[in-house]
Amino acid sequence: MPDRSIPEYPLVMVCRNPQVLPAPLPDGYTYEFYKPGLEDAWCQIQRSVRDFTDPDQARELFRTEFGNETDLLSKRLLFVCDRRHRAIASGALWHKNGYNRLHMVAVVPGMHHRGIGMALVSKLMSIYYEEQCEGPIYLTTDTRGYRAVNIFRKCGFQPDPGNGLVDKPLDREAYVKAWRIVDNKVKDYEKRRKRNEPDTVTGTAGAMEVDSGFNKTKMCKLSTLTKPGQAVSAFHYHQYSQIWYVTQGICIHKVEGQTYTMQVGDAFFIPPKVAHSTELTEEDSNIICCEFDLESVLQHNVVPYDKIKEITGNISFSMLFQKELFSTRPQFSFTKEGQKQMERLMNTMLEEYNRGDQYYEDFLQLQILQLLLIIAREMQKPSPDNGGKSSLVFDKYREMVAGAVAYIDVNFDKPLTLDGMCRISMVSKTYFCYIFKILTGKTFVEYLMEKRIDRSMTLLRETDDSIIEIGHAVGFHEPTHFSRTFKKLRGISPREFRNNAIMNPQE
Figure (tube, rainbow, N blue to C red):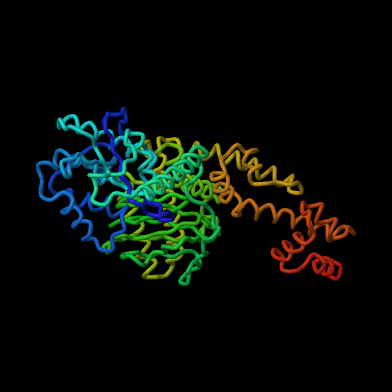
């Protein structure tokens, strides 16, 4: 996806000595040349990376750029298909004004960092030799696509003013400014990747909290999204869990600093307090949404509580982070049998919720558990999407973070920091914060403050130490910070709490 936070300048790059790099596609992905009927797939890919206000704009772009040269398209326009034979990338070795042109290369959001873009460019370069082309190859892009620029450079393309290649080449000043922007962004981007950090700041900072809207029942809500504008496109989070399942159309989901394209048969699990945004891109979409409060679902101990908590933690961790761990899809695609079960169950739940017949809440409670178990079972099946490894990795990280939680319980009065706890647990900050929320239901700071305030309440009741001394004893070095935090969490000041404890010793 283009980075719209930076200025947009057109760029030209040229490869004067085309070479075919050893860059194969990841296992399970295949190439397919254009054939009549694949225009829709091309338009879908372009719509996922470009700002189109009208679906017909993509079709018009196809006609403008490629015309009716069907024979040439069948040799020069190439698609990459995933394991389910869906087109997820495309690019062409085209021509313009007598020059070879690497044209309209695009990978759908959520499929980056797997080597697909590099492999596609390398394959197009091999077509250059197969078709016995001559001369340099050029391409056009812009500063907002600096990630793609980074790939093109690795494939031998270099900055060029574009004289004679494009209608409006940049002047010298704009050319230098544009490439300075790209160089700085690429340098920062590579640093973040080496540190295993996401592209954007994660967490709930700056995100708005959206209320559950559980009016019919306090346990859950079932609904469908069918057209753009119904989803919450602003960055937000909930205090409850969500399971989304796509039965028709496309849904763009942004979470944990990444952007994913969900298509038919994909599911996404969003646990509480994870900031995300959602956008539907097609009028005829159909997304079934199950929002639920896990505590309410498990309140009658229908199944062992800890087991279901473990399953939901495993599901959400695997879906969000398996791309970084195993270079696979972050959302989950079901097997054919799993897809049938998932669609049947979610449609049954939607009907049950809408009808509201007697005992419908009890039915929904059991069906939500069944939903989680179907996903968990599917994720355990050997497949290229999880390799049978995700649950093992989650277990390892969970144990390491659980050790950090135990450390905080004993050392909360010491000057603890998030970076320090990540070092102790040997887990990256992104993974640590995510699993910490799963284990405790709180952020690191929230959990630490609760521990300190709980201990201070005991000292206020049972000792004659001054409030300043007690604040210092539980880890607060500034009396004002202690008093402010205490009042925020307990609604009264430490002094008021102590006075109440003296007046009402039995409470």
